[in-house]
Image (cartoon, rainbow, N blue to C red; front, side):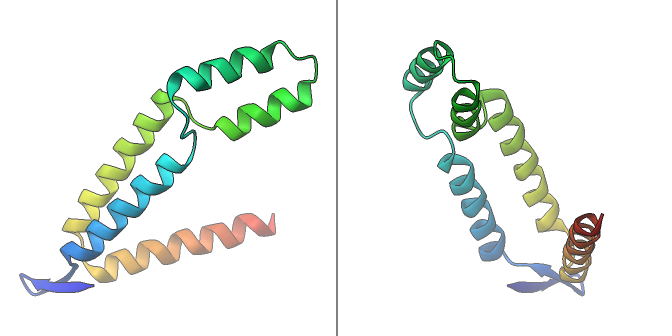
Length: 107
């Protein structure tokens, strides 16, 4: 997971590549239908009177192209940052995120 560079431990290439592959896989799991099929589903569902069903289908479809591109860009930047940081800083950032998650759950 780590390698030493300039006296500092850094995430190795395999770790960063695994994270990049995993994030790409997660992004592609949502809305895996081709765009034409997604548009058809949206048109068909929009004709229904059941608002709850329309909301559920919209949630299942997930992100649009712009949102997906924004997420992919953010993840790409985060992975580049991971390549350049030390393992201790990565660990520290993960701890901050975890603690923030726990404290938000308490509210």
